[in-house]
Amino acid sequence: MTTITATVALGGGCFWCTEAVFVQVRGVLDVESGYSNGHLHRPTYDAVCTGATGHNEVVKLIYSPEIVSLHELLEVFFLIHDPTTLNRQGNDIGTQYRSGIYFEDSQQQITAMAVIEELRSSGVYQRPIVTEVLPLQNYWPAENYHQDFFERNPSQGYCLAVAAPKVQKFRKTFARLQKT
Image (cartoon, rainbow, N blue to C red):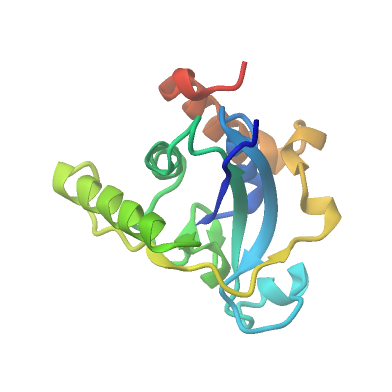
């Protein structure tokens, strides 16, 4: 039996935090921290941190739409970050921390725009949603030391202060989507 997969990249601040949540989502087959939608070929963390490359810190998800829908993934995404702050998530400031959904096909774009419209209409956010929705372009994996960072460093200060609360929020709100 062949599993149908799809790919989407999500920028919601530091990729350590975003990765920490999505590795726990049922139907997500692979999560890779990386950089997308900038202009530099083979960007490095140091270059991306300058803000000069145009890249965003993202997690690239390979998922099974038969198990988890993009709509559900985006519900999780919007729960764990603030889509109303331009180029910022908490103390992480810069264009590399912008809110973004980077799609691979037009159906994903339609779904992303529909979820954003649902959120706008619901009034859940007091400020406008600034999440960009663009085709996934110029993606590069982050350095190896960024991969599975939370899993390998759960006691690190940033992980305790920022990533762990996002993981807890996911577990509390989306227990039905957790891997068993």
